[in-house]
Length: 354
Image (tube, rainbow, N blue to C red; front, top):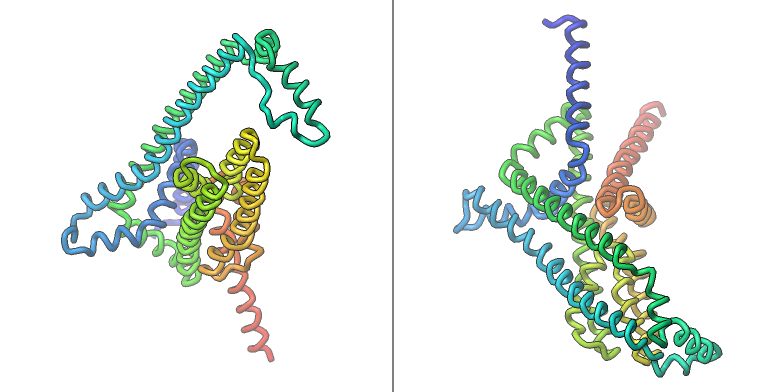
């Protein structure tokens, strides 16, 4: 039997090794967390594929196929959006070149604005109406700044791409060894915290899946509804705009960047009523979806009250970024489970004393 000195030395040595390991991996912890979130949310799909007759027992092939499928689902819309962004950048460059040569005439609708119409047209002509004014107004977009921005954007793009490849690599590993890892985590929770620790781990897993399901349902529903709104407003490619809005709708309040830009385009084309109606319609959908529907979907699956679900979503996003969208509700679900157990213990003690 080891003496107390050996036990303490082993504990201190293990703690030092854990801290050193965390220090070595600290820049990859967020990527590891993303891989775990993806694995937990897609694990039922992975299990169904393994149970199918054609793929039964082929763990490596199923893991590889599902990992590549997830990568394609995420990268395909981003690649399409990047290609559209490059096309728009070329159009913007041509517009700026024309502005520096001959200026940009004011839109016809600008002068029709109530009260500020005449002033707005004069300001436009002063800033962009002639080549001299346009050159002076656009001077801050100098070549050096543009080159610096382009280099920074390309560097960030490359870093994000390799980070995503790292997530996919870890995800493939988790798929292949997920059963063993899950048993080890549950066994450790059971040994450290008893049966309640086992239940807390299950609640955390359910919260992650509920959050992902809520994101997907919100994105799908909002994309369809906003796509109809884009079509009624007369915008071209409403299906593509609806799909893009659905992707952004998975992040709380991010979809307003898309429908807000579309509303501005309509206003710039002179369709002020359609642009205003589209913006109001999008804001109403965003407020209802992010403040009521999403918390109800997530909280209902893990028995988490509405207010704590909402605070978990917003607090998690504020403190942890996009990853906090999953961590916030998960932490709230575990804390609520601990709170219920504590209340139950108090009630049992009162009954035993009575």
